[in-house]
Length: 378
Image (cartoon, rainbow, N blue to C red; front, side):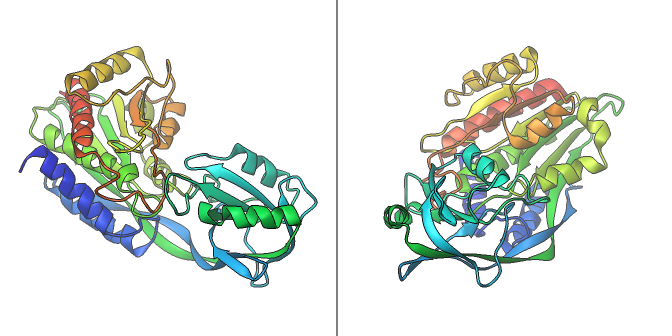
């Protein structure tokens, strides 16, 4: 089997598993599948439990003038009771009980956070616009400490009639009903021992959870993570190498924080952290950047990217990190290098195999970071 075939098989299977939201049935099955894949190269691959209170959704919709559209609440925002929030619908900043605004795909809406931190409205509707139809979800960085009024995200197709209703101050009802239920998700953790166990180890990580199928957002990173494991398993390694594929990316980075709870010595004690972030090998409007904590790692990574014919990957800037998980360890003093960015279908249902993925680009990125890993670990 060629490398492109291996990469394609991994992403195709990942996509076929269903919605990868943390704690969902597909997420749990996907963790077991990935641990099994990893065990081909690292026999000790295992699942690490990450407990959470999963949000189980009920009625989530906006009703206006005899019409309604279903949506998804912000997972770190407020919720409603079964009666919802009723009142006028109007533009953000008006005197309406329910405020309306629009955002583009991949935007993290500082304006939304500012509004709900000092709410002018009892609830909000956020219309998400993207390259294709469907809802573009926002992550929930405050999942463990939700705040503010209910915020319902809806697809861009509803935007025109909601805007008209808001201009007219039409009465509306917003429902964002959900309950929290105990659940378990999993990090996938594996290791490859080196010749000299006294040397600082290397860590290779990638997130494995997200909204919808997230084929391009997460699939390329997972395939690259496995390719690095494959290369290092066949190498004569001086250093131990730890691999972790974390859950909870979209829910306050639950997985990486759980992983670090018992491994704080790894943060600054590792020789390097290598991170496959979002959109590795995305086929449409990929905006992947390279981040590195120091010029040595940045130079090595750029050289490897050029050598392997990877797509142009600009630097995020001197000492600027990319990727949420790598930013966590970087802020704690880790030496790390990462690739991450957005793409046209970011956080949308249309992020699907095969159209959203460039297999050759995934393979080139994987080979580049495998080169860096070999350089650092061997």
